[in-house]
Length: 94
View 1 (tube, rainbow, N blue to C red):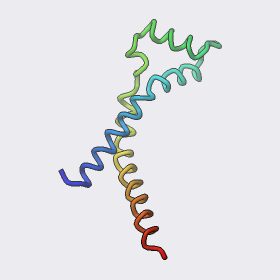
View 2: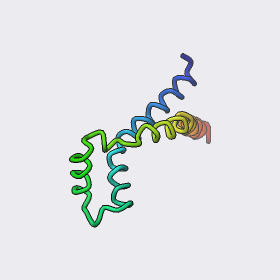
View 3: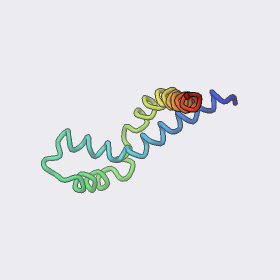
View 4: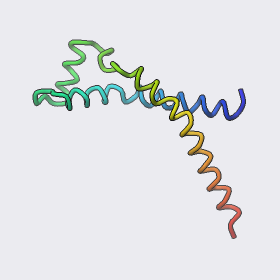
């Protein structure tokens, strides 16, 4: 695997992991926005766990990963390249 391919793959994995890590919070936030009837965050959490189990917290995560991973695969290597270019330019300045 070449260096650019490895960076694209790493960026995609990073995007997928970050989306999966925050998926439960996003699910709870969505439930609160749609209509939680004044329930608190912990009440919404317990309701989801009680009715759907742990899988309920990750509902819709696959779609988010499919949507985010390609963009992060491109964005992260470009950001690293920009920082690297900035660092190289700073050393060559008088």
